[in-house]
Length: 176
View (spheres, rainbow, N blue to C red):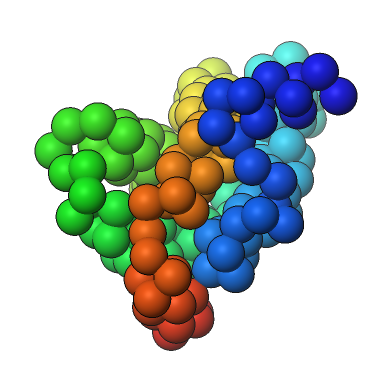
């Protein structure tokens, strides 16, 4: 409870106080985070050498599925929310630049993993090394989601006009 109050003091808001579009973006985080937790657990098992080949095959499939669900969420933020906020605070430095950088970092780790994981003759050591990319993506995105929920979304709520919030909601609905 103290953490929640601290976040409110730092400008955080409960989801009930966010507009419908921002609330939707926030509600998309828990299922993505739950998938990330599962990916992270698999990377831990692979790292420990527990059924590496089997776990790696599962990891590869689950990472692909995760990417399919992450991509539209990222597009809603990068293609709609970030440019709308950028009008007020710019996009080349500051919060939007940081958010886009983190998106790029996480998606880069995932993309590299999926590309290299296609090789059919990976050694156990190579599988373990590749799984580290997903572990890195997990840490990046877990912190990233927290920043969005506690800083960026409340900032957008205060910054955007009611009309802009309606436009945000309408445009994010178009991204499937």
